[in-house]
Length: 111
Image (cartoon, rainbow, N blue to C red; front, side, top):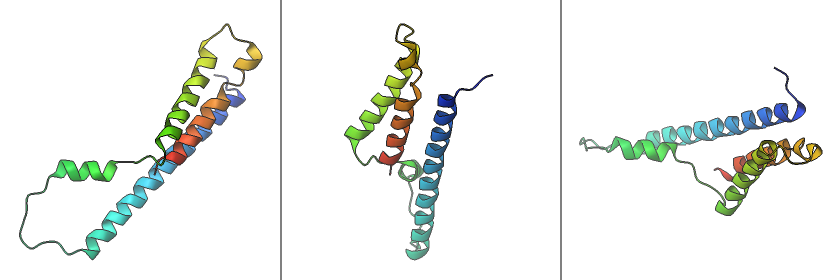
């Protein structure tokens, strides 16, 4: 399989995006672990809703919702550049620019 420059750039950008998500999750779990050591546990066993606590741990927030939507629009625009064969081939060759910009912007919007 032959990879062009744009495909390689998009793969690297997506890998960096996933690395950022992993680092955010690792920092969040470390903060929760540190918080458990600071706050003493109650002596009486209380029922804990494990579903709610697991959802709290895995939740990500967006810094700016409008920029997050713009990032999604950029990624879809790059996909549409490849999908429409009637466009100018020189324009279609730059499909990776909006996709990469959208992934980078989306990565910075997650906190």
